[in-house]
Image 1 (cartoon, rainbow, N blue to C red):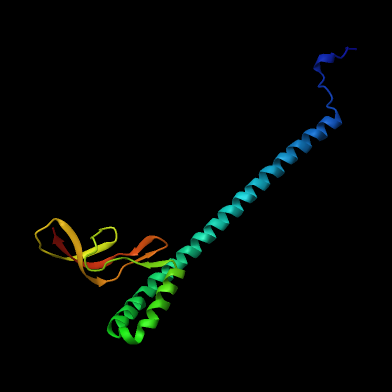
Image 2 (image 1 turned 45 degrees about the vertical axis):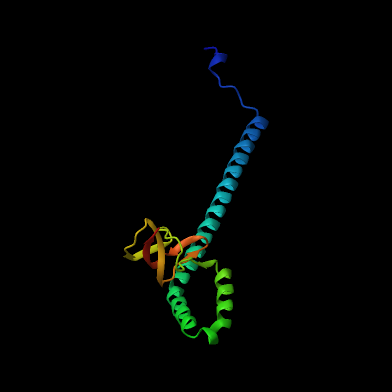
Amino acid sequence: MKKEDKTDKKPVENPVEKLEKQNLELTNDLQRTRADFENFRKQTELQKSKAMESAREMTVLKVLPLLDDIDRAIATYNEQLSPLTKVLEKTLAELKLEKIDSKDGAEFNPDLHEAVMVEDGDGEKEVVSSTLRPGYKYDGEVIRPAMVKVKRVL
């Protein structure tokens, strides 16, 4: 008979060590799963927030022609509709909608104004001579530039 060589045998793993190792692996898996879920939750909230903001912006874009009509009505019937002006300004502020300054004499800014006509003049400075369609900023960003007529002054 052959004698068994003791070096060929695998050492027997202690059952407690084996359980501790399994416990550590399961704990790590649980921590990874929690982190993945938290990242998923944050990403979902961000997507939801962006979708709501996009929907608000699209709604505001659809309302702009109505605001143009209201502005024309106020300009035509200023005395009768002057109370409406204050309510309209308050409502626009609540909606984070701001009218772009395009009054006569305002400095022309291509980021805020869209020049559709340019009157010749002596100077190099360009100013707004009249507003053809008001422009608006939504939440600080230009949603529609003001359509203006520009003239050059000294």
